[in-house]
Amino acid sequence: MSLKSGDRVKETTTIEGTGTATLLGAAVGFQTFSSVLSDSDTCYYCIELGSEWEVGTGTYSAGTLARTTVQSSSNANALVDFSAGTKSVFLTFPALAAQNLAIQPLTGILYVDQNSPAVSPDGSIAAPFTTIGAALSAIGNATTAAEQEEGWRIFVAAGFYPEFLSIPDLRRITIDCAPQVFLTDSATFTAYGISSTQTRASLSPLNFASLTINNLFSFGDILCGQFAAGNVDLDVTLNNCTFHVAAPSDSVINATAWTTQRLRLKLNQTILRGSSTYSIHGGGGGDIGISYARECSFAQPVSVGSYGQFSLCLIENDLEFTEPAGATSADELTAPFGFYQCNFPAATQFTGTQPGDFKVDDVTWKSAQAGVTINAPATVENLSNAYYSANGADWSGSAPDNVSDAIDRLAAFVAATHGAIP
Image (cartoon, rainbow, N blue to C red; front, side, top):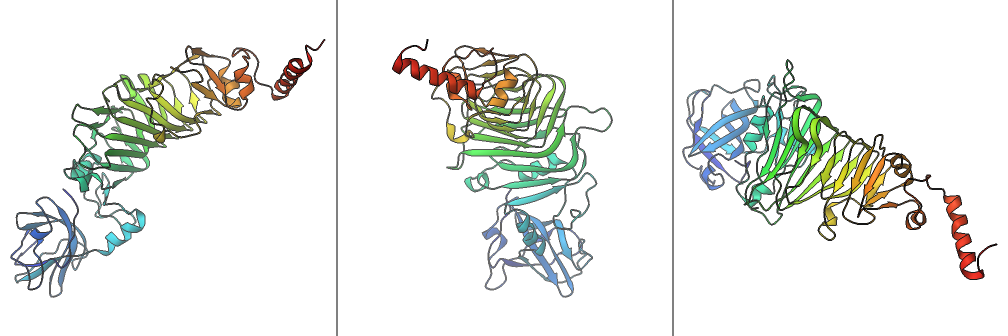
C-alpha cells in the first residue's frame, strides 16, 4: 500500500449511491488510474456530476476505486449518495492535504482517535482509525525501495489504547501522542508491548529504518529484534515517554534478539523502570549503542555495546558497555562522549572493556565517587580535570580540586627542574 498521485488521470464512472466506483476508461486526452496506481494503492480523488461532488482518499483495486475517507463534499463533507448519470472521477490534491504539508512534509499523516471523529479536532487530518494498530497495518511493510524511503507520522488522541503494537518492517514511522495517551486499558492496566523486528533485507541503498515515539505511557516493553535475513540499521527514539514494566520481564528495551546490524537508541526525558531485570539489554551480537540519553531515569541495569552522551540523568543501577575497541561506528553516537551532570544515588558498578571508558565531568565525578565501583579493565576519566585522572588520584578519595592540582603540578615541575623541595 502506498499513497500515489499522477498527472492528468481522469476516467468516467456511473456509480450510484455511496458504494465503490467502477472506472470505465480514460477521458479523451487523459490517463487511466491503472497507469499510475497498483492494487491497494491509495490516492486523492474527486468525483463530480453537476452540483454533486466529493473529494477524499480512495483505495484502488482492479479497475475500481473504494471511497475510503471523505475530506469534503457537497453533502456536508460526508459520503455523497450519487444520483444516476455518467460522472467524472480524477486524481486531485485536496486543500486538507495541502494544510498537512505545513505540519510535516511526510509521505503520509494518519490520525487515531478511539472515538473516531471524521477529522482531527483542528479539522486538518482525516481520521479513519480508532486504534494505533490499525494505522500501523494501513502503512504496512515496505515492499519497494520507494516505500522504504517514505516517512509516516501517526497522531494519536488522548485515551487508553489496550493493544500490542507491531511496527511494520523497513519503515520510518513517528508515533506522536497527545498528552495522556496510555498503551493499556483503563480497568486492569494490563501490559501491552511494542515490537519492532526487522526480518528482511533492505530494499533501498539507505539501508535503515526508524521508530520515534513521543509522549507515550506504557506498562509494557519494547522488543527490537532482527532475524537472519535482516541487514537494516534501526534508530529508536523516545521523547518524553514513560515505560513502567508491570510484569517481570527481561528488560524495558529488549535488544537480545538484535543480531548483526547497528541499533541506535536516542532518549529524551524518558523514564525506564518497573519489574524488569534490565532497563536496556543488548547482548544479541549486533552493534547496539545509546547515542544519547538526556534527562532520563534508569532504575534497572543498562547493558549495551557502546554509549555516546548521558546528560542530566538519574542512574540507579549498574552500567555495562561491552563493545571492544574499534567495533563501534562513532558517527551515530553523540559527542562529546561521557556523563555530564548525572546522578548516581545508589551503589552501582561500571563495567567497560577499555581504559578511560567511564568519562565523567566534575558533577558526575562527585556523585559517582560515593558508590560506583569500576571494574577493570575500565578506568575513570575526569573530563573536567585531565591531570586528576592521569595522576592517580584515588577514585575513592576526595573530589577533584583544581587549586590543589595546580599546586601539585607546580611542585612536580620545580622538583623536576631544580630538585626536590626541602
